[in-house]
Image 1 (spheres, chains in turn green, blue, cyan, purple):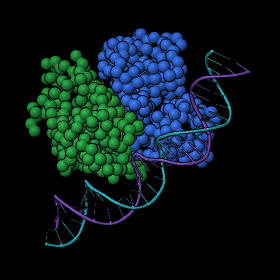
Image 2 (cartoon, chains in turn red, green, blue, yellow; image 1 turned 180 degrees about the vertical axis):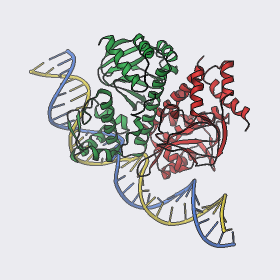
Image 3 (cartoon, chains in turn blue, purple, orange, red; image 1 turned 90 degrees about the vertical axis):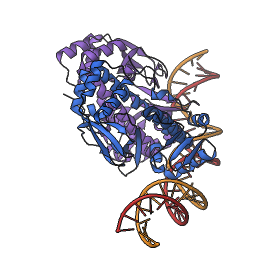
Image 4 (cartoon, chains in turn green, cyan, orange, brown; image 1 turned 60 degrees about the vertical axis):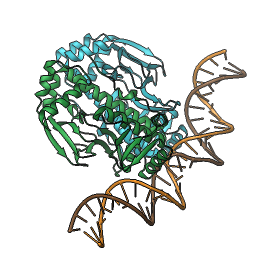
Length: 244
Length: 244
DNA sequence: GGGCCGACAAAACCCATGTTATGACATTTA
DNA sequence: TAAATGTCATAACATGGGTTTTGTCGGCCC
């Protein structure tokens, strides 16, 4: 992927949150991004580490996870193309979680120092990043509600709805039939369930005609019923959030 | 509470995250805070609303909650004195959750527009707020791990450990014996448990000698064992996080 | 081709936590 | 003072989801 494509994708990211002036655009183009590809399940960052670069996802999926001392895992975020994965590390010294590639991943990396200078010189871009950080926090809150108060069926349905909407926004893919590159174990770890139970619930959603599956391809068959089962309301994604 | 006390508390907040220059201090003193007191369980903000003011807690506790359509509640944050409660609303147009007073509350309010101008004029303060927002996100992640992957006993122990540490930081109170002004129902809603089960677990923590209770006063009797039961590691609170 | 491995599937069993109910206090309100 | 209300406590019972196990299938390596 050449550098002008990278610039364009990053620019589109910022413009989705804030109108950018000509000067802002020039500064974005001047950011020293380096493109890199990594394999699925590579660690991008580990808890306790102090990172030096900030990463933007060009292609593929990643996730944040936290581990308990005895090795249980909770996946706390899924990260999609067009997102910065470590705004945390812009201002926090030490990572409080791991970041791992879910699929093969194409990344654009920029030194943290450069990004910090950039947002100081370019407040509109700074605000765009603020918005992104706040939206991720909002997603965390919705996931807390999901894991804390919904049963397994609603939880899983909710995750599928969220993926549908976010995939659509992120890659402009067909929202009603998408490749879900997560194992049932990973789904369980994102939902606070065991893989065995994820299997049961997936099957039940399928026999009830809400979704269809072929390998890991998930298709939404009956969006209204899936949305109802999930109690899904996309407000928490703040999709229309753009400042002028 | 007079205005110089307010300024001092707000200043202390910022200085806990970033060194402030003389100019920064002057600008903080010039912020048009208005002090207000509200009763316990008053709503400060409701989901879907568009707020116009930003609120700083001078005294008392508040919480963020989300509701499912059929009325189940998850408490997703506890807010303590010395914290800004709605950084979200600095850059997001529409609230994705409710904020409610847990106790009687003394607040200092400032118009959002004023705060936005302030952080533009005063980047050090802006960074301090960034740090706060990122730390709250980190707490959300730890709560996700807690609710998703720990059993009821660890979960509750974890919450008690977190309160102990945060109370200590926020009000300089004795961390080992604090007033916990939450009902068992509220505790359950923060942990994804029913009040009946919270009662069972509290009792068991007490009979095992980890904590003592007198009314809602909680005392930590055996911090090492409570911490172990909770798998508590304060890294996620980023307590030492201060930039220069 | 054969062996290995990861993911999915499904059955049997069980327990941590939910549900429902009821009583005892303490606090507030009339 | 009485009534109403909120909170805590505790018991009996129910169940959603966990645990364990065993099997199948497809992909990959030698």
